[in-house]
Image (cartoon, rainbow, N blue to C red; front, side, top):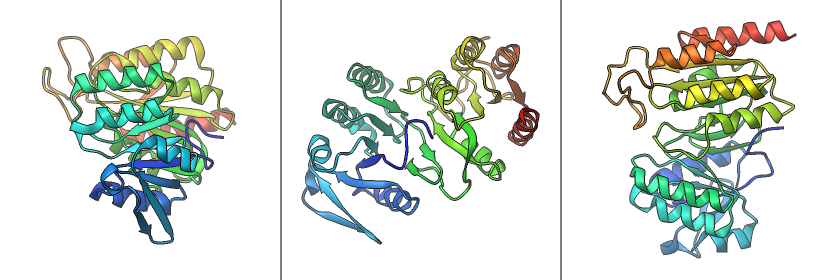
Length: 294
């Protein structure tokens, strides 16, 4: 089992013919992802040869879905065009849209996240590394060779911390890893992933990675208290961040007493989540928790 993405997922890439789209489409195919088409209105009708697979380019998402049965799209288009790309995908009825692009204006993200939700399209991102179900499918830019299939579910605001925890816990492996992104407005939240992992029979433990800014981790803690029975191990980045300065992600900013790493850690620990002080300590806490479970 997995959440949101499986080997049966049929994947489109909006912006596949651009430099980043081409590079990561090749990597996704090499990881076993079933990429069935690209979307670029200016290059419709062409095909791109990715080593051992030829992928057709379509003029629009609806046309591509009708031709291929695609149920996932990955958005690799420039920030100015992301809103239109996501709205097109939602109008076509795609089930999952993974928005990799960073630097999208917040008002655009607000608009397309709400629009997609109304139409039943799940957004992962924006400004995220995507998600991977190891051994099955990889939708985004997460390296596929740093872990293996296993029994840990991972949800993270940070791409690089996603990779580090995947690598440090590679001997156990992961059911699915979801990079939800660090922008102020995102489509899929910690809580969405906690709910899905709780329901996934192959996920035994959940790793939750947060960072300064906003109150997502506090809300996740409240959800864990009421709804999650599986062990959760956490890490919060940003204990040394100065107040009022954005750190890395557009949403990673401490304002007054709001959004500090200490407040997030306190909220998580209050509901039984063990929180590591470093990524490596977090990995050790995961190993201890799994040993305790068995």
